[in-house]
Image 1 (tube, one colour):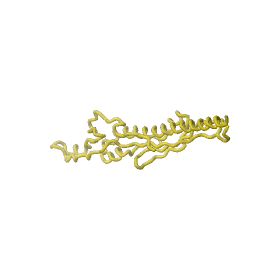
Image 2 (cartoon, rainbow, N blue to C red):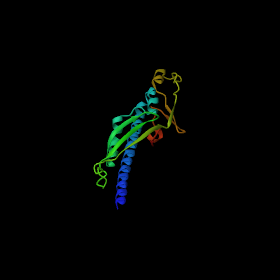
Image 3 (cartoon, rainbow, N blue to C red):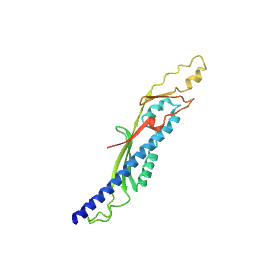
Image 4 (cartoon, rainbow, N blue to C red):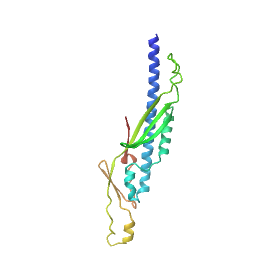
Length: 188
């Protein structure tokens, strides 16, 4: 009888730990997805500044606080609280999130487990799918208003996993979706 109760306690603790890991995975992915959305939204803002294109494609330019707020929201949806939300940089940009379950393991025959809450950690990263093709120098145009052509930024030329994008700041017909620019995945 004692062994059956002990196995039940271990199973209950394992289930609580699995819940925490699921919440951590969801929270880390939510943070990375939020950062990806921010970067995609920032694409329009950077089109007129070719010097910022490398930073955008490299994953720079999102608000850390907003991404961690998204992590907390998803942890809460899974009945957990975020205890740590850290940005990671190597080898890829992303977030490491630690969560703690809101519910304890509960009453068992094992002393001290009634107030124990499981913790888990997960890391999700953003990986750029695009390579930036260097803009060509306008060189003053073809006999038109040379000053106007020099001020006009060149189109943003991207190769995203074999799909070419040419984004002209003055004629935006089609923009890549966030998942065209970056993939998001769990690591570890």
